[in-house]
Amino acid sequence: MGARVSRVFRNFNLENRVHREIGKPKPSAAPRHPSTKDFVDKMSKHPEINETIHQKDEPLAILLRTVYVNSIGPPQQDLKQKDVPALMEEERRLPKSSLQGNPFGFSDVQNVPKGKLSIVEALTVLNNHKRSPKTWTAEKLAQEYCLDLQHTKALLEFFIPFEVKIIPPKSEDKKRIKAT
Image (cartoon, rainbow, N blue to C red; front, side, top):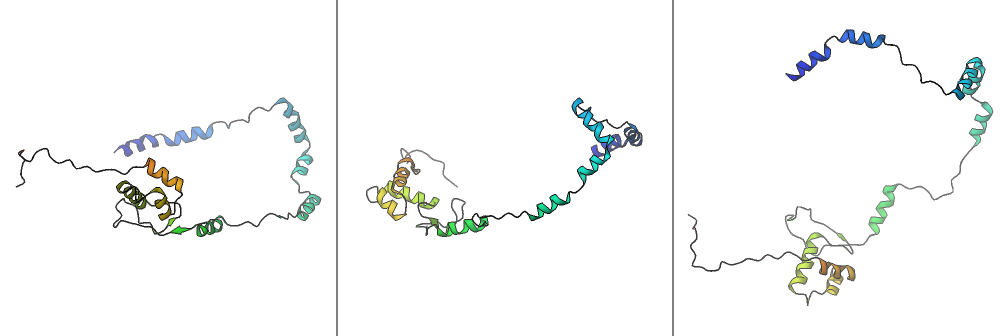
C-alpha cells in the first residue's frame, strides 16, 4: 500500500518537472585565475599550438621504443608457492590425545606443529599436572609434547583448569520432593 502512494507522488507532474529541468541554463565554468586567463586567450588565437600539443612526436616515439629495462633482481615467485614450502618444512607431530565427537565444537586436529598444543592436549596437560605434579613435571611435559621449557612453565603457572566440586547435602534426614 505504501509503495502505491509513494509512486503516485513520484510520478505526479513528472513531464512538466522534466521540461523545467531541461530548460534550465547549463552551469557555467568556474572563473579562471587572472594569470591563466592570458594563456587561454593565446591558445584560442593560435590553434596550431593546440595541434602540436596533441600531435604524436615521431622521434620521441622511436626513442621510447628502443628503451628496454633489464631486471637483475631475484626471480619473482608466486606468493602461493612461497607459502607452501614453508608449511611443508615446519615440523609437525601427531596429537597425543583427542576426544570423540568434537566436544568443544571444533574439528579434531590431525597434526600439530611442534612447539604448539591442541585444545584437548592443553587441557590434558593441565589436568595431568594438577592431579600428579610430581610425575608430570614441566620438564617431562615439555619433552613429551615437544614444547619449549620456558613456555611450559608459564603454561602451568598461569593456566589452571576448572575444578568441579560436588557438595553433598548436609543431612540425609531432610524431606525432599520425590519424583513420581
